Length: 168
Image 1 (cartoon, one colour):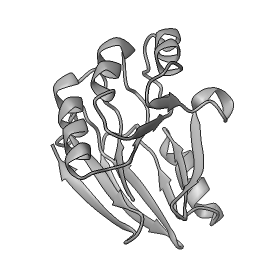
Image 2: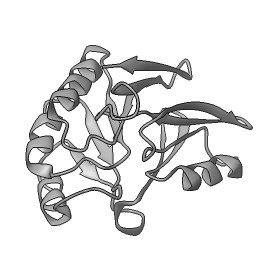
Image 3: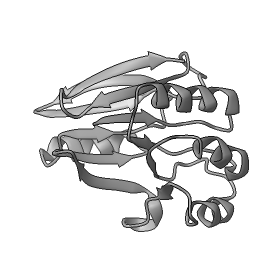
């Protein structure tokens, strides 16, 4: 299975559309968004074009949270993770890969240090990161907004356990 990992969109609709197109072209079945989507109305319309399911967490700059929650808990193909403390973390096993995702780097680093996960993901810094802590991959896909570095995302292949950093 291929997973598109992206985040820190911050209402950058053109790049978000590019990210969705890349994810669809790579035939990703799941999209993980690290938070800071921004205002939901336009972003959700773009994300609905993704051909798979979407899981996202809240960041520190998610505007109009009530609107975001209202729009994501409908018949759409994605959900704001609500299983852990108001949507701030995601934890699930996908195709044999134990995944943890949080917006903030330090929390993802601590999860990686625990040794409980195969893949830990974070956003927030707007900088691409590809580290290994013990046997755990620690990834920040960079940002969709492209503020500190060029806009990017990561395609993760669960079968090969390979990650591909793609600049938009």
